Image (cartoon, rainbow, N blue to C red; front, side):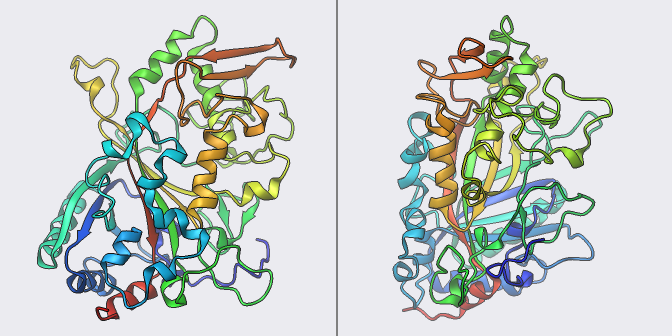
Length: 469
């Protein structure tokens, strides 16, 4: 681990746990809440900070894994609804917080949420910018625990006049043996390339993957008094802002039927599984193309420990992993010339599938039409400089690595079938030695979004103690 003065010793007991660890829970329920009475809402927050059966989970290490975890985030409108003595506009006036202040709805066009993805089509309360105040994240080991804790929470909602606008349920998909897996509806293994963060506990049993260690201040708001300074100013007062983070919550429908049809429609040009791998940058089992470009496994096998242990140093032309592939766009590693800039744009991702698994052999014609997708949290210290930058400049921009107009992320990009394209270089590289796939539609549709602030435990306590202004 590198020694960076801006990433001082982290107070894990003061940081919300979901920022530091993914919990590895099997089911989730994310509530969208509206504050109707500021005083009672503060009582509600205080109960969650100081509770026993229901308590906000910190990042402090545990000896025994709990049956459930609970975390909380506030939109900018939500912080204002709490009627804090401090001027919320003043606290978040810095340009770093512009996206947070404006909201996910206002920022939607800039990151490609238009047409069917437009916020007017969002659901479960996320289409109401003035009312979606709190996001409450409940994660549990099993459905019984999730149901039990949901009943307890809803009892609190009623007593403290918290209005439930809606909720989103998610659950890990089961593998062939009926065990929870890391797969998503598109059939890919997910959650592999998380950043290694200075001061965060290492994953148990996962060796060093050789990737750069990212300073904690890229994800947690840290106050520094001497150089080198943390890049993002902490909201004032410090008791409110320090040890907090920001998160973009995204409800991303995955059109599996259209995706699988697209792969089959191009099978005359390229094997469907190879095309799926080229679009993603990994085979569906998670093996990266950089380590195994021709097939989804090698002999000896690529181990899980190696799944993130690679870069693109020996693949500048994208012969193994296309430069425009999903994982190469979202984490370019050394694809781009300014590597330092790459490490400033990383995101901590927390994702879990929602909706029923897709079964192409199902006799029920409606099963293919059921909505399924991913509930995602993208955690960072700056929504504008990290999350929105990635979406605008890497996912949806044709200028990424000089790829050209209308060349966007083949999986996540705001693609238009009329002009979308994706180049798969062939060996040896030359202008006429590439396979160009055209006609991409949007395989992922945004069904909801919110920008929220994840305060520290200290900040949550502070918020409950502030009398109405």
